[in-house]
Length: 391
Image 1: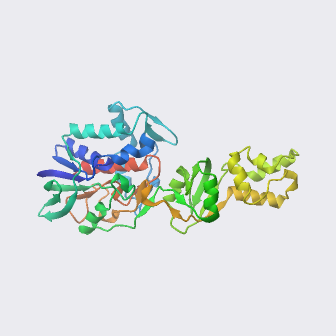
Image 2 (image 1 turned 45 degrees about the horizontal axis):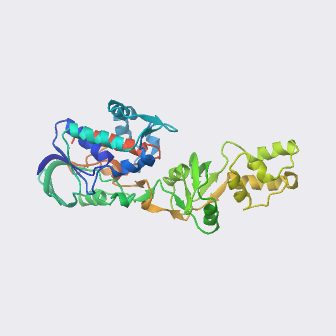
Image 3 (image 1 turned 120 degrees about the vertical axis):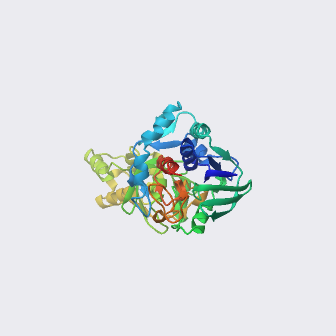
């Protein structure tokens, strides 16, 4: 079975790449080792697929080479993918901060990709595992569970290690190393934090409660909702900062961004308020949280019974909670894998390995990791499209 192009991996980047190449008249085969393609597409965005973002910038991505993503993102933009979904009549909406979701369900995005592959006469085979790959002259020979496959262009679109129950594996990294490409260190990312000891007990007592926070690690910060869980901390704010966090580093959380408790206390004193402190704070934050958080540092007394210094310390407790997470929930719940095939070994224009003609890497398998909010899907579309133009 000989093809012009074989794409290993039937996810977002692989399907986009295959359809793009198919439209150029190339004979393309997509092989997927699990029982269906697009599993991560189907589960994304709470089942509604956050398929892109209106505001895509290189600064939304993390890589050892910060410039690598620029070329592809400029050549296939959010507008280009929006044009595709509108051409297929898909209804969508902006949820928040430029994030675009399907009105109906994630299956609609997968159906668009499958329809495009059908129009482009792309062949798709599932339950096809790759046992070995060999370079023979100017072709690749793949020994697979469906027989020997050969091609002149081989695309690795295998994704990362995130969510192994969806079929994630390190196959793409193994292929890269086989052909002499380097891989950066790998880490679960866009992932909840775990806590321990009294912080864990506190989180468990507040499990299910969400509030808007500003969370920072080093110079990076995000203003988004935080969710307390039975294991620790989750929610968009935590997932975002996990992209920048390394084990052992400190994270700082402001539970009342945009307001200053010291000013609130001063105004209450000026108004000669005799209310209990917890009731004053609860006017600005969830009462359940305020009662639990204040109890960590003070009993709740009427405002006049506190000294200025005590009120400053209490304000700092709410605005500057500094902690070192015990760790993360790991690949089991991580949305992406940070790190991957080194971008130093891959062309940013064609996605071809610099020293192995005909071998390409696209999507999450590369050392390019986006923020939460449609950025990783846009990277999949852009990298897949650009490689599909040349394979």
